[in-house]
Amino acid sequence: MLKKLFKSFRSPLKRNPHSHSKPEVLNNRQHALQRSRFSRNAVNVVERLQQAGYQAYLVGGCVRDLLLDLQPKDFDVATSATPEQVRAEFRNARVIGRRFKLAHVHFGREIIEVATFRANHPQGEEEEDSHLSSRNESGRILRDNVYGSLEDDAQRRDFTINALYFDVTGERILDYANGVHDIRNHLIRLIGDPEKRYLEDPVRMLRAVRFAAKLDFDIEKHSAAPIRRLAPMLRDIPSARLFDEVLKLFLTGYAQYTFDLLVEYDLFAPLFPASAAALKQNPEYTGTLIRQALANTDARIEQGKPVTPAFLFAALLWPALPARVVRLQDRGMPPIPAMQEAAHELISEQCQRIAIPKRFTLPIREIWDMQERLPRRSGKRADLLLENPRFRAGYDFLLLREDAGEQTDGLGDWWTDYQDASDSERRSMIRELSSKAEEGTDGPARKRRRSGGRRKRGPRSDSPASE
Ligand code: ATP
Ligand code: MG
Image 1 (cartoon, rainbow, N blue to C red):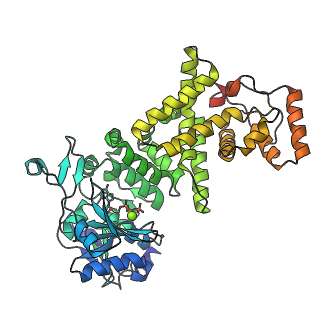
Image 2 (image 1 turned 180 degrees about the vertical axis):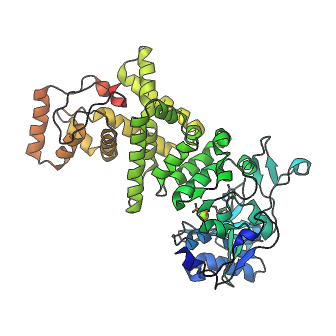
Image 3 (image 1 turned 90 degrees about the vertical axis):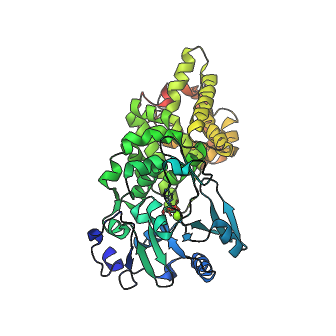
């Protein structure tokens, strides 16, 4: 496939990969990218900017993905026009961002992101008092609005494979950083000195892992080497930005593999400290529950079904709950208030790292509360639960816990049967429960005897429900 995309192509290895000079230019006989493969709206934006006298190219993920025959998520444009100049050209454009200012051009639901060519940051004295660019003491870029030339723009991008520019007029690819070579060799490689580039923006470590998982590429060894050491730098990233990044990590179809890479590179702990501690203490249960939740998410995305971040966060954090419940119980708190308090503490601590908005933290709590209510089914309770808008998520979550090996005494199967049962069957199911006199009297923490559900699962001692 790749051979077909790059018909005849000289080895780029002869060039200095960090040279600032001329790009490698691939004409339309050397690659198979046609302008018709790009979004019509994005091509229109490029052409309108060119007609207005600016330079403009399609850049980044869309060029990379199309070269790999993948459907791009969105189409980014790089231009010599400033955001304000872009806004002046398009009625449907808005200027957004502070740390990184750019223009969004809206076409119905499609947004074309138009970024102005930027230069690498001046370091040291030059940048003092600059309102355009600033760094903190570790070199992290706080503002990134120093404009530059096309050549500068290529060098300030994160990975070589993201620094490819497509010229719609000549259907040429401009390659300043040997990105085509790395695409052919399936390598994620930072442009420039990896350590410095991670210090400038630690989120690049997450991006390296995200692209490695999505594209099934390796992280080139010099780009991989500093990650474990620098991973704690993620703690300084604003929590709102990390929330966006975490959604990209887990909601784009490659979550399970991404999680494995995050753990491998020690990037999971700075994002989810409590879950990482649970993973250390209870690797099998925690790992299985999280990976299963992520596998379900990937499968739903593959099938075009909706996914909610709430369910995902509920699963990521659930294994961290029991230790807290126990701690509070040891201080004399009864089980149910201890569970409530632990949930509250855990979510507020997590929000300091990753700003999960209220519209998701509320459903997380509801999914967890449902876990305490699902065992209590007597009288009208079961039917009331079925009508609860959160029932489906709560039930799915219960099955997830069981899949991870939690002992629930066949509760998942019971609910599966109950949903399918007729009215009279339901009545007899409830009668059977009360005759067994096993209705919950002491909340979710009680261990129950198995009543011989369809699934065979061994009891486990390290699951949250068994604390
Ligand atoms: P996708 O859209 O598929 O997630 P992408 O590569 O298009 O991947 P975006 O986040 O849309 O990623 O960013 C567009 C481009 O901007 C990237 O390809 C890269 O060139 C550049 N870029 C984005 N974030 C950074 C960063 N933190 N540091 C340097 N360059 C970046
Ligand atoms: Mg993109």
